[in-house]
Image (cartoon, rainbow, N blue to C red; front, side, top):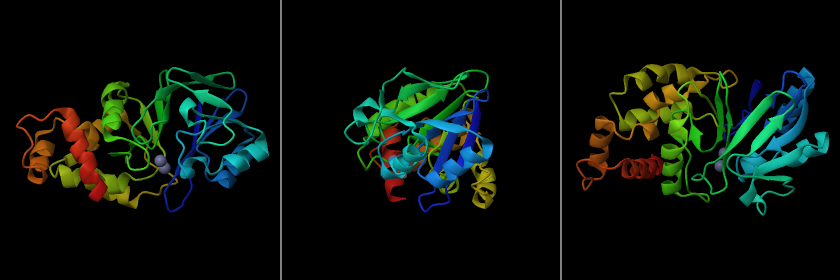
Length: 263
Ligand SMILES: [Zn+2]
Ligand SMILES: [Zn+2]
């Protein structure tokens, strides 16, 4: 499986992706908002975009569909429940569905509500597992819930699905927010040595050559996976004095999400 991560350089800091079968050159474009860059990357490498996957219905993920379909005839895939939200949907997806790309690439669909209620993450199995997670999981952060989502659903997605993936899963999110998110991690957990050590490098990072994290690293630097951390809980109690002595993980997640909205 070839993964081409495309930095759009736009104000929203979107990442687009081409997932390519090395045998046939057939490609799946994930959220190809910057259709010009995606089409140019495919042309330069001799790849043919045959499918488009929208992780969810927001315009900064679907806005390139029309141009890519016009140029390539690609089929549009997204969550089955997004059929009234994404024009021209060819295939509605549900949990466990498999997207085949060319001969060798198979991606499993995960139904991951929270950022919106029809959000798909794609999972690649094998020796080099990967997760294409749209706006659900970001490097060192989590998606917001104020454009059609729910924090309790996002918590369930993190707790029941994402946190259970193999630790060596490479994480490919829909936006480059890592520097800002590490700032939030340190605001919530000032003694997080790993986040502190990474912040200067990530502030200086060229997003066209981004660090690809793993789930193991996310569990160290992403506050939304650190719900049992005593210093996260201690800091949270400063903002929410009524927090119980041993708050449950869901309460911690939802309060962190609330603080992140205003941070
Ligand atoms: Zn979104
Ligand atoms: Zn987005």
